[in-house]
Amino acid sequence: MIFSRIRTRRPATATGSCPYAHHHTTPAAPPGPAAPDARSVAGQAVAFVRQFHREHPAAGDPGPRIRRVLAELDRTGSYRHTAEELAFGARVAWRNSARCIGRLYWQSLVVRDRRHLDTPDAIAEECFEHLRTATNGGRIRPVVTVFAQDLPGRPAPRILNQQLVRYAGYREEDGSWTGDPAGAAPAALARSLGWKSGGERFDVLPLLVRAGPGAEPRWYEVPDDAVLEVPLHHPEHRWFAALGLRWYAVPAISDMTLEIGGVRYPAAPFNGWYMGTEIGARNLADADRYAMLATVAERLGLDTSSDRTLWRDRALVELNVAVLHSFQEAGVTMADHHTESERFLRHVAREQRLGRPTPADWSWIVPPVSGGLTPVYHRYYDPVDPDQRPAFLARPPW
Image (cartoon, rainbow, N blue to C red):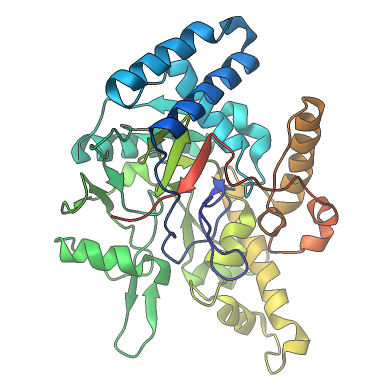
C-alpha cells in the first residue's frame, strides 16, 4: 500500500500518485508544474524553514537560518537543506500526499540522504540498496532515497522507470500480450539499449537512469537479491498456484520529483508497502494489465454469459483473497483495505487534533474493492491544494 499511478477512474495529475504505494500505473506522467523562479524559491524556502522550526520548537528562532538560506540563494541561485530539514521535508511530503491512504505512518519514513551522488552508476547501486533496505526480510519499511538536487542550469539525473521494480510487457504478433502491458515502453527502450529480455510474463525490467537532457539512458540489471517476489496461491483452491502468478514485495515509485522549500530532487524513489487491492484488483485484474479475471472465473466454474451473474465481482474477490493469503504466508507486509481505511481515519483525527488539514482525493482514498463497506467512503475530506508543499510531484519526461 504505498506509491504508483492509474488510468481509468483515477487519472494522473500534476500532483502525481500515491507515495505510499497506492497507485495504479499505465499512462505516461503529464507535465509537472514549471520550475519555480528565483522569487518563488525564496518565498517557498522561507515558508519551509518557518514550518520546520514551528514543528521543531527545539530548533529555536528561524530568523538566523532564514538569513543564511536567503544569502545562499542570492549567491548561488539555490540552497542546500540540512540533513534534518531534508528528512522532515520528505516525511511531510508524504503527509501531504492527498492520494495516499497510508499516511498514518508518515513519521516512520526512513530517509536515506544520497544527495552527493549524481552519476548513473552510483544512483543505480543505491537504488538496489534502497530495495534491500525496504524489503527488510519481508517486514517492509517505508523508505525514500534522495539523490542530487536540480541546480540552476544543471539538472540532476533522472530515473526513467515508474517504479524500481516493474515487469516488462511484450506485444505479440497476434495482438496479445506477454507480461505487463504497462511495462511495454520501458522494455522496448531497454531492448534498444542492449538489454536481453527473457520474453516471459514476469521479467523484471532493468533500471534506466539518464544523466541529463538528451543523454542516452544507461540500463542496469536489478540484482536478484534486491527483489523479493511472492508466488500467489489460494487458501482453498489448489489450482490457483498453477496459474503461475506472482508479484514483487516493494512498490517503490521512482518517476516523481520531491520538492521541498523550492528545491527539487528529481531522483527520489520512495516506497511504503502494498495494500492488497493494488495487486489483486488492479495490477492483475485490469483489462489493460494482466487481465486475469476471465481466467479465474473459468477455473471457478462461474457463469460468464451475462454481467448480471456478477462473475467479475466474484472472481475479483477470490483473486484478492489469494494475494492477501500469499503475502501473509510468505511473511511479507501487506495491508487489507478494511484495516487501512480505519487507520486512515485515525490519521485524519490525529491531524485534526494538531490543527492541520488532511487533504484527500476521495477517488483514490476509497479502495477499488467493496468501497462502500469501508469507513473512508462515507465522508468528505479537506480539499486538495495543488500548491501545498513539500510534495511529491509528477515529473515531465526528458
